[in-house]
Image (cartoon, rainbow, N blue to C red; front, side):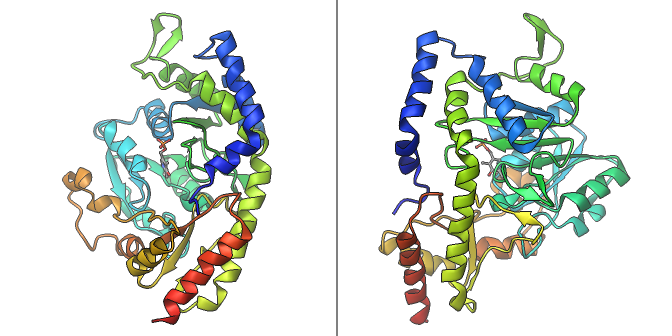
Length: 368
Ligand SMILES: *Cc1c(COP(=O)(O)O)cnc(C)c1O
């Protein structure tokens, strides 16, 4: 069994993807080719964003958004300790200070009721992550940001394509970012990402920043980066974007099947909770389980791959030791990190495979 089924997906779109790659090779237009703007317009149209700007990775997308806001040394940015490290790493990389607040125990996303207490005179922005494919509580977060004049950046690395109250992830705040890492719901064949901006001036600035702060050839207004997406990645993503709506529907069906198949194990297994006003793209199908590590081993022994997103909350990572947090500071995150388990998830996992996963989980708990 495969955790993400990337090969199955490739085989399905192979002819189109190969043709797109060949087109790039035939034109030698490797940087800034037409596939970049084709992808950007496609992304904008997909989610109704004023601007989508392709870049080198989801991590660089966050760095670009923070840079465009001028965030750096002396500034604080409020974020979640329960996410992939890139979210807070981008803040720290620019010399600003990540300030963590705990997550909601149902959705595992940033708990908006804890944000206000963490705001200081140095706070410049709130950077929530929309974990596992479900958008975080953007209305509440935006309202707090407005009250304190803060920027909001949605880390939508796992949620591009998801909706919140009928609107798309990555269009719900001034800035949002996503990732096209191969295993994300919309993944390329290498690193890639995008910044979404609802403001024209800021969009211009991001475009400059990702190419050495350049405004015209060899005219540099800002200290920037080399954070461009390459034309090959964009061309591959253009093909995959065409099928993305259909794949999202399939992922939703897969999630529903899992939830149904695990229903009778409610004592041991808590399926993902999705708010009625949200639709998730299920970047992960993560269950909250008892005896997590033992279950994981039992599944591995039947060749069922699983993953843990994430085993150590960020405030307990060595890289963030300098922030001075300690065990016990974010109890919900710490608890979830010990119980969360991601099951094989893709648009292409079969019902038989899903049933096998559920059956093995049932066998494991029946021996408890
Ligand atoms: C994957 C991911 C990132 C980083 O994306 P890359 O493209 O790998 O740099 C950032 N935040 C979250 C929540 C992610 O899952």
